[in-house]
Image (cartoon, rainbow, N blue to C red):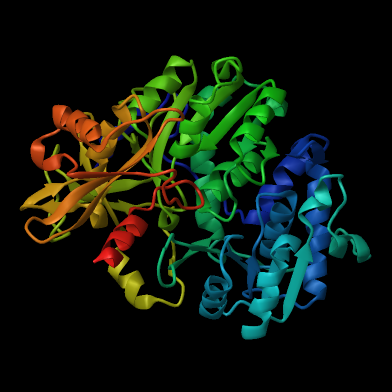
Length: 537
């Protein structure tokens, strides 16, 4: 593109372009081990592991995997919760030039089987709590190696049994790895069928790490590097946690406070035990629960949390206002699996606009094109599909050239997300292309309805979905979770929406629920709700 006008909004110390070093992921681990060898790299339920100890354990485990026969290019499934074992397994695998297949620990046997067959996975690193599923998997898929760790191994600082028992030197594997080599197969979220595996290279992941770290410099630069930490509650099998927690922490020599599962009351107690959290990447549903928790006020979160970031799904404006009222630095970003988690974000110190995802990262170009033809650029203020070109863009989809060709055209990734760009070049997500509701000839973006539902004082969580309607084509249904102790009627919710929305945008029906279906990182799954309605006939 001829120009990137949004650069004028960058914080004072964010570069307009980045000279990306030709590093690979093992180099990312060596940097903090050299700079702060005795600093805690990991704080896992009170057990600390220093950067030097982490390096040594990664090398030992890499040599153990090599001794078992794992070689460059093999696909190794990592099927672990957020834990020290995940970090060790991940960096040991990529140190051999093997490709990590990131697997959700909650996957069923059938889901694991489908992904194992799709990727040609030769090895699996998993944990004791899912052994029945692993045994069943091994009966239907040929895996050359299965390595099991105990989740509790590191609670008392005990290293995994494989690395402990083998007498191995701390030598770096003698494997040539290039930045362009695949490092990770990261699967897109899917609720039916086989998700698509985005091929992320070492370069993609290093570029994303640098962009993320340099973007946040404005609020981090005055803090002593040996004091930096990050709250690691996001799952590492998701690209958001992988880049914005794990890799960010290594690049910045920050301690990762690892939380293997998010249980609200336990998490609030954990926050209470830590004096300060430098960086807290999170998601809207998690933030909503924390900010509205009875302990939130007494914990003085504004003094405790340095920067809170939200990604993976839109965050309601009402919630953003509450965060700011508490005195917390807040930024919202947009990214995809296919863009290595990043792409667009609000400046840390600069102009912020409620409801906006901000401006593109360095070295990133954006186009908004006509939703129907996907070719003509729309005018400012008009909705269009986001096309993105960046060092963050995946190599393609694993074993799926047809879908790769559909999504990647002339270097541009067709995202399926619909946005508008205002006069200041700030982007506002309108909705997912597939989520758009067409009712009575009107194009309706459900996120606009979501925003209104969240303004209702009794509503804790909500989502609007288009369901089939014989007369209008589709009609709008709202799914609502009320705050504890609150009651409301369908009529009350609908009337509230009609005060703030045109009649054709207002929900026609409301269903109250205890909880809404969500992905591993808290994104509400409209698709699941649509499928439920379709089954009703």
